[in-house]
Image (spheres, one colour):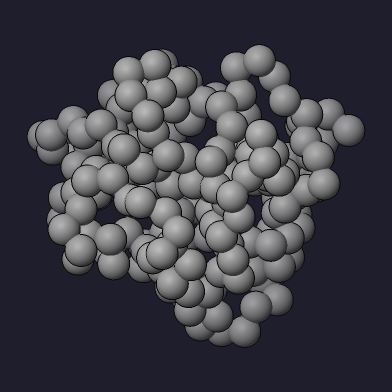
Length: 188
């Protein structure tokens, strides 16, 4: 299957999975991700997250807990639709970005995440991730990793874990996969 076909397949799987969860279960499942991190991953002082869309696993409970422990939280920020993604401090309110994704205000300071929680459509045990197909996270993560170590953690429902996914030279592998059920250290 092509990446495009796989995206369609895994988006449908994710959507159906979330639609079939009991009411309130998505929030409880997202909150369960906190417990899986405590002993196994060292979280850096600045943590990058995202504002969940559609049926993505919502990192909000995880980010709130991490922030309560004294870490700074950054979210993706786009100046325009050119595809360049920076990270700015989350702040108290978000505003619509150029892709319709909520993002911090341009007035918030730029931050460099040490730990980055990344949304995905599908992922395999080697840390190969399929996103929405625009390459924003791969480019941003490559630039960050060129300057310093960054721990990349993909957030997923179990139904998003594939046996194997195709990879291109520019794809940035994840270090961990975090689901409501478990934390997986990927095997490069």
